[in-house]
Image (cartoon, rainbow, N blue to C red):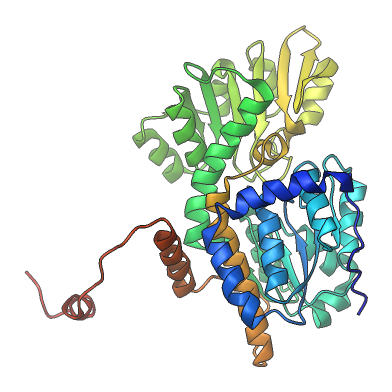
Length: 426
Ligand code: 3DD
């Protein structure tokens, strides 16, 4: 097995000490992961397993990587977005002997080259965020998908959608656990994490006042609703655009304005897409926008804002601040695009806070162990997308509560009986 411990490609290995301090900062705010690291470094349930990971290289991901290694795994890593790698964190992981291939600002060709490097050691487990790793294995190394890899995990909504479609087509060649769909991920990372980190990215790239601004959010799912709450908290006038009646109704009853993008385009000061769909903001919207409108995206891929159409409308473009490009349209109007239309929270800031990633990655960690344990017992899940067991969700929430110092009530025997009994009525 060609495990290239110590092989890596990062921006600058000399940044390792800075990265190590960031990782220590994250460790101090990820008590569940650190508890798992202490517990499983003794039993090493991942001993002998080779995990290829493709997930944003942040200080929180470094805690996940080093906890997987502490649990006995060989790990090789790439970033899942060309703009989300924190170079000092990547350097710290490389210096710690992790074969990592990731740097901020890579091009698409380099992005896939990095994914390929993580396959050099013939992984038998995959850990993905957006399914680009799983797709690469299925498309370029079908034999590896069919025989070497015993299972994988998927971090994000978009990735789970892709994989469910793949499984429905019978094209998925190994079982994948949908980490995204765990309540302790979806209801926390997507809502509180995306809510705070998207505002963080917008403010770092613009330093504009949010109070009083017309803040247009496309998509009122877990992510969009989290952003809406944080923007409203900063005094913005939140405007929601949607295609799903129920989500739109929820937004209206939360007190937000709801209207089509055609209408919102005329009044918005700041636009953020959180839909997972392509072409949400297109030519006709750019044409309607006010002078100085700020446009960004917090969805996994950079397909939600059609920058090709914006470029065709423009006579020039310049980088006016980090992660902030000023497009000057042919009629002289200026529109500002953040993070090249890629996820603004990770490209222009540091992604979600450690406290919510603690639970997302606890689910990643427990799911990898679950796949290894099933394999050791000769059990293989079917080649589809599998939910996290409810017990695991509650277990992780319980540990998190304890680490936060909270105690909760317990059902009495009578209450448990009552809940399964149907004879008692009014
Ligand atoms: N994601 C957001 N913040 C992150 C962080 N600090 N480290 C690693 C990954 C991070 C992306 C996740 O929220 C993922 O769950 C998603 O994209 O849904």
